[in-house]
Image 1: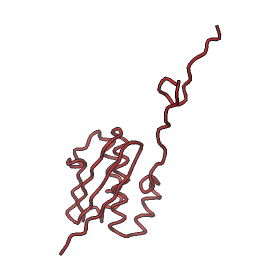
Image 2 (image 1 turned 120 degrees about the horizontal axis):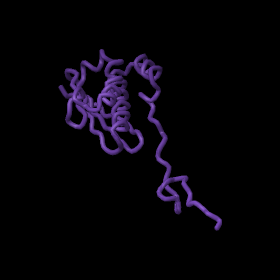
Image 3 (image 1 turned 30 degrees about the vertical axis):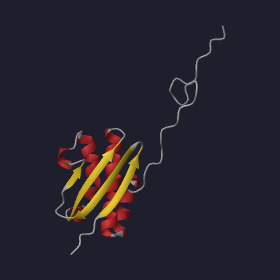
Image 4 (image 1 turned 60 degrees about the vertical axis):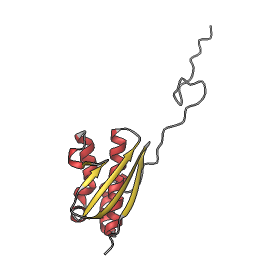
Length: 135
């Protein structure tokens, strides 16, 4: 019997998360660490949301997530999006997808906002201008 792995990915700002979901016993790892030891606590709680909402499916699979780039909370958001997408793909359950969308739309749909590129003569910020004194 061949094990069918499911790949999913998600982005938030500069953070990119990739997940591999295989049938198993409910073990979730982020960058090789168990999700229970993921810090800070608020980021851990954010990552756990789709696992708690889809508990019936989450307990039947192992998920390995690789997250690169961005900050701590951007990585947590990217991982959360990836977990939710992978679980829906695994379950093929429209009700689960609807439940996740109703709970929080960003659990299934990526936030497309990105950093605005800087402009010339702006001191490194996108909209800050060089001050004029008129003297």
